[in-house]
Length: 152
Image (cartoon, rainbow, N blue to C red; front, side, top):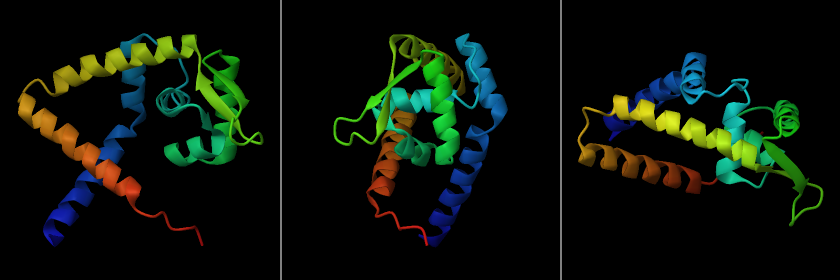
């Protein structure tokens, strides 16, 4: 299993590097016909997928500093793409939720992502793509179920 774990780690490092390239985000936004600061669009997507969500949780999910995410969320709010309101479970937390304008933008991004993925996976069998999706979901779920160590 040592060889497979090492190969998986190398593959994940490659994937993260490829997915985090600014050119990929720019190409996706251009394909979607969306004009939005590249730094804001991942936050908008996560708010749409996971919202309502507080800034601290959002910062953890995107791997950014809380204060940076707070400023960026304020920009999204100012653009009318999200709204913020007090949490129903903790009034100290202001949660972000997607607006109709924001949902329209994420839908355009999703459609562009699908068009781009169709080209990427054009030579894959349906079964291979289904297996990849299933195994990636399983990996993400299993990784998420592990206890998170507290920072020292």
